[in-house]
Length: 163
Ligand code: FE
Image 1 (cartoon, rainbow, N blue to C red):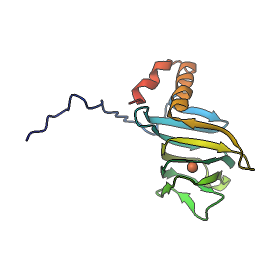
Image 2 (image 1 turned 30 degrees about the horizontal axis):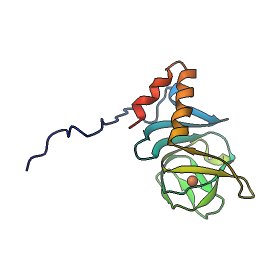
Image 3 (image 1 turned 135 degrees about the vertical axis):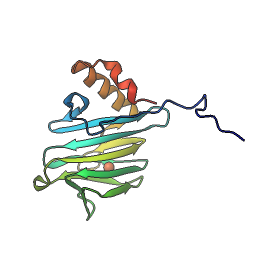
């Protein structure tokens, strides 16, 4: 049996030399001092890889996940109100499907950056548990398209991250 160097049905790889991009245009702002850097947007599998960058303190979002999330903290610190651990640089977290949690960043940790692999969707809820909105790979793609258009890279810039 031989294996061809590249199966004709294989998707094209995605390689980014600068995942923690210095170029501010590559960070998609989602709220004041909250941004994400898209690395990989899987329209075919329904998940996305992003680096979250949060430069403010306090409650950032309350949400639940119907599918798993993996996170690796690169710098700073953050936590969920519902859990007793603190994510610091070098830590890894698996967020199980069904968990609802409130993301908090404390001022003393400074800027936080975390690589997240989010499957399915983020379902945003208010303090009473009522659903207020959602994100999935398609809303992320649309958010990126609008951002890249606005900063002059062009909406189609997002396509390099999509498979
Ligand atoms: Fe989460």
